Structures are given as structure tokens and as C-alpha cells.
Length: 459
View 1 (spheres, rainbow, N blue to C red):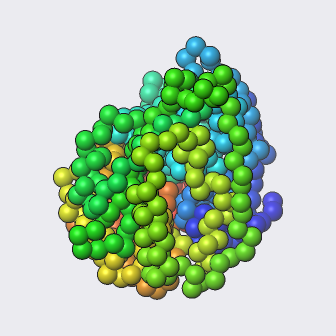
View 2: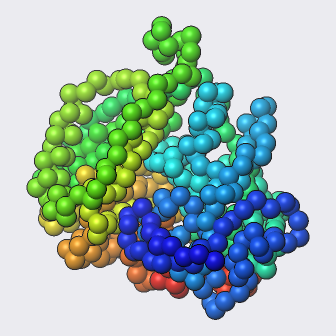
View 3: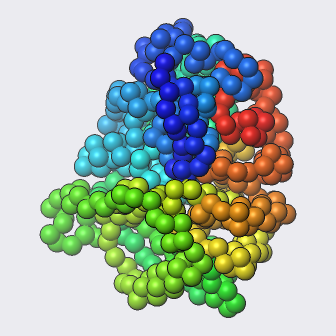
């Protein structure tokens, strides 16, 4: 069994891990141990077991486990597709990029997608990812029909709302700590073109931005870039991007004959780590001012190809290197609807006062969350995602933001987290965290599956 250094997308923490490979197995009573690596399940001290690592797009330590980390890139076959219902059945290591490349030209799209297409199906289920359409479509787990899971004793179980229902609920959003996902079936949505009608709405402050979200709940997709370093009357000024899948009649005449044809985007890369001083309050403040001004001057309505609308950062390979070798932390939280305005205002004021802004600051409106999935992140309200270069000052700021989020009844997103305390986790997830722990203990999953995150949060 080999070893290699692993890290999440934030590039912190880094750990040397023993490595095994998740490979396809036929449905049966047991998963052959050789295909999962000896000791991959059902052995070891509490929390030491194993965790699956997909393409490394979890930001922190959720898919890192030094005793044993199981790589899923070999588990990447398309198994079946039902043209009538749109139901796709794939292995867990298949990525969103592979799905979209194959199915967009055939008139199908993912029902829910996060901000990168370089994620695996298994990872989307484990994190119960959300997208720009949570207020109308829920999270990815809402569209999963069933999944096949290697459980704590090595048994392969089919899980759905009708079969092994509790395990199904605990696995969606369960951060890989209930078992190794082998395969999953979920429904794609039909589209009439590969284009998105984007409408840009300029909001001069936070209240105006929230008012736009609330008045445009009928939009299929909505997301805002928010200037987290603006202050005073401009606190929270934003550019809200609303989107709809374009129909053929929305396209220019030259595109109507081939509505699914999109020229491949030019991809750039960042070959080296940026110097640690490159991102600071001054440069981020200048970037934010320029970006906001450009958004004000941009056309209010335009057509974008699906790749540019949903995955703007995927056009820059290795964009995480702009934060330097020390890495960065993504801080994403959600606040209940009733406390969102006041809580968001306090968060933005704290960031502006600290002069530690994030040039990636994304605001979204969530619909109702999935109350039956204990670790699923969304709740009805507003979520804000921020990136901070790692430093003693940014860690101090994030501790302060924790206090604000907790005071307003919010919580942090496990798939983005690398430094949340157990106390903050308990406050945010409450009795749901204890329900999840009891399930892991009762099923033996607490010994079979573990990660740096599970130990940090005593899961």
C-alpha cells in the first residue's frame, strides 16, 4: 500500500496518507477487500478507519485521513441512462465535467451543481451540495433516487427512501462517514440549449441586494457577488446574477440551428504560487471597486454559455495558488431568514473593519433545508462564502465571525471548513450532530470511517 501527501482545495492542512483505491464491484453481499484495500472498512480504533477522496475539491480536511484514504478516480464508469425519465446511473468517481460533456449536447443538465464541475458524484452526495437554484430545486440529495454503499462491515447495500432509508438519509450530507459510495442514480433535467439568459441587477447596499433576492424568487438561478470591504452606505453593495436556461427563440439567429454547440473555453493556469503579500486589504479593495464598476456598466441582459455562467473559476486551473503556498480557508455560513439581514450586516462590518476582504464573496438565497439529513448544510435563509488567505489575523477574524454566526442561529458548511471548533459545530448543528453520532456508533461506522474533520469535531 502506497503513501502520498494529500490536501483539500484550500491547500491546508497537508498530510501524508496511506492510500488504497476504490474500484468497481458487482452488487453482492460483500465488497472484495482487495478492491478497497485491506482495512478499508470495519477495522481500527474509533475514527481511524478510512475516508474516500475524490478530486480534492473539498476545501479543508473532510477527505483526508492519514491512517487510510481511499481514492475513487478508478470508479468512474457510466452504467445506464433512461432517455424517458432522465435518470442517470454512474459510479461514484464520475465527475460533473464528464457528465456535462456527454449530456449537454443531448439536451440534459445537472439538477443541482456547485461552483466547480471538477467534483465527483460521490462527493456531491457526501456534501449534499447546493447551487444557484437551491430556493427552487433544493440540494443535490433531493434528486438522488438510490445509491450503493459499502457499509461498516463491508456489505454493499442499496439505499433509497424505500430501502435502508435511515442509512440513505445519513449518507446524504454525511461527509463520507457512513460508508464508501460506489454508485448512484439521479435525475438530470431537460434543457433546450446550452445557453443561459443572464440578467444583472445592481444593488447599492446589502438591504437592496436581499430585496432583489426576495422579489425574484421566481428566477431559476440567482447568485450575487458582494463587495465585502465596502462600508457605510455602500455596505454590502452587490451584483446579482439571475439566470434561466435559454430556449431556441432566445438565441441569436446563427445559434438557433445548433443550440447545443458551444465553443470550448480557453483555459488559463497559474503555474506558481503567488507571493503571500499579493492579496491584502488594499489589492482586494481595489479589485472590488473595479469589479463593481464594471458590473454597473455591463449589459443588463446577455447570453452566456453554460460553462461560463456556472463555472467561471474553472477557466483558471490552479486558481487556489493565488493565495500562496500557505493556503487559504473558505468560510461559508448560512443564517436563518429572520436573522439574515442583521447577521450579514454584522459579518460585513467585521470584515471591513479588519481590512481582510475576500475578492471571492458569493451570496445566495436558500430555500427550506432537508431537516431529515442531520449534517446537510442548507436552511432557509442566506448563505455567504468568503475566501481568506491563512494568517494569524484571518484566523482571528474567522473566530469573530463564528461568534456572529452562532449568535444569529447560523452554521458553517462542512465541505468548505478546515478550522471550525467542536463548540461551534455543536452550536450550529445542535441535536442533529448528536443524532448523527449515535447512528455512527450504533452501526460501527465510527470505527470503519474517519477523517481529520471527524476527529476534529468528535464525530
